[in-house]
Length: 157
Ligand SMILES: CC(C)(COP(=O)(O)OP(=O)(O)OC[C@H]1O[C@@H](n2cnc3c(N)ncnc32)[C@H](O)[C@@H]1OP(=O)(O)O)[C@@H](O)C(=O)NCCC(=O)NCCS
Image (cartoon, rainbow, N blue to C red; front, side, top):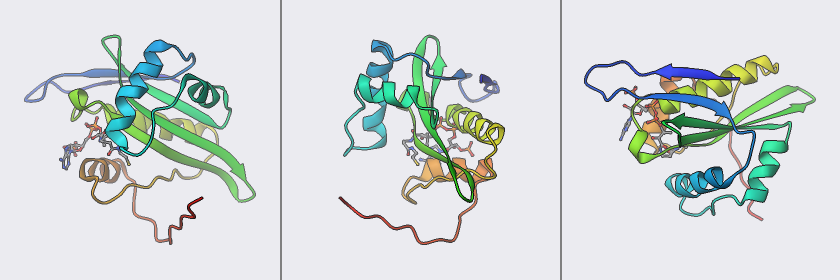
């Protein structure tokens, strides 16, 4: 699916980003992820081309890219999988390049993922975000995500 977002003109620099699912893994994608992932996590290595290919090839994930003037300026991955209780949808690994933030690119990425999750039959979309991520939490709440009362557990292997 494609979704185009045009930022309003005014006191912000107008930016329009085109959101597209990645369908090929090439040097540009690998380099873009190598630049973006450190802006999301200091503890995760950027994905290799083989790892990216696995995401792109999987029917259970969509790797969205935000394009602006021929450059990849952001990414989001949507995970979709069927469970006994229904189709589950998770948004993961959302990051916009520091040079492109504040112009709606993150919003466009999320709206593309929500639309695809709805198209595939998910009844809701889940994500987590540390409260220290102020911009992200503000964005998600503005889009209509609401805190969900559950205990989040992690088993470290
Ligand atoms: C979160 C992130 C993806 C948002 O991308 P973006 O393209 O700037 O998103 P948008 O322009 O659509 O919206 C950003 C919102 O954050 C707000 N914002 C920006 N900087 C902020 C800050 N320091 N504190 C609080 N809010 C901030 C913007 O004002 C905007 O909200 P508004 O439109 O209601 O005013 C981007 O900031 C980012 O990559 N951050 C680092 C990685 C990260 O935290 N990822 C999320 C993991 S859960």
